Length: 149
Image 1 (tube, rainbow, N blue to C red):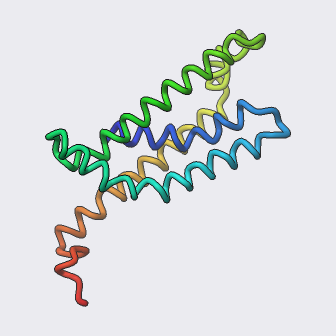
Image 2 (image 1 turned 180 degrees about the horizontal axis):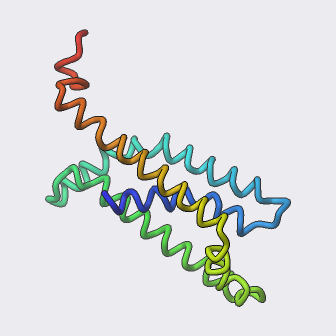
Image 3 (image 1 turned 120 degrees about the vertical axis):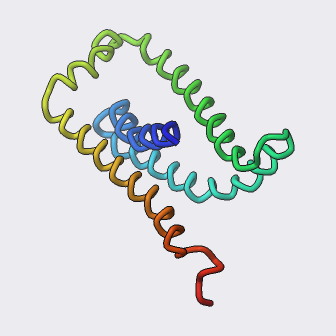
């Protein structure tokens, strides 16, 4: 689950990374493409749960592991594509300036405060989303059998 959280955090941060890679006049376009792709993924992703479960069962793995294995494969592909793109961009004329950008950015106070705020918000959201279904199940709420129809 920790890896799922890290992946989700990376996906959320990708919009900022996309904006940094584009010239000022195209930053809004880059962010909109990332948000659009996230929307498509949010709509299409749940339709992959059943096929991923069946595929995992077909290879004698617990069916519930299927969506996680699919996610791991997709993240691996994204990592390879990102590494290839970054490798080509790092060879450009401004590579030495970019390599120390993270260190220079974290040396200032405002990015650190923003980063801590994002991390705290993500932890809070994850804690509530993890605790709520467990608490509801403990109180016999939320299961289809307990719902009054």
